[in-house]
Image (cartoon, rainbow, N blue to C red):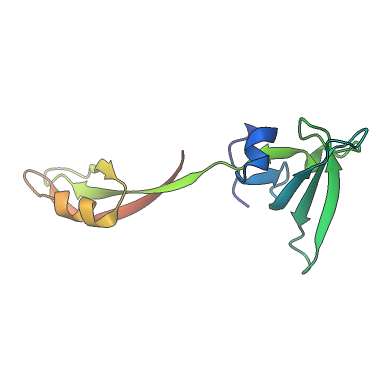
Length: 129
């Protein structure tokens, strides 16, 4: 699993459908909030990677797990976007650079030009938004 930026849990965003994960990176399939429960009003369905089943767990409003198991605390999943840029090499040395980044491959390809640099190819980069 790649390490992701930790974004604090936001109950409103989670209930609005924004993606949620646990501290240990498990996917939260759905969050449901019960106003009339006395405690642990938030229930989340957690996808278990080891098997085909999911687990229902209870949480405080701030996303902390109901027991002292912080690996299950909830966080907002970072949004990953793909950007594309031209990869170039300078003819007089070994420096390689990526120029402007674009949201689609086609635009990056159209913007590719040699000039004083040698165009190699368009590369895809994933970044957290």
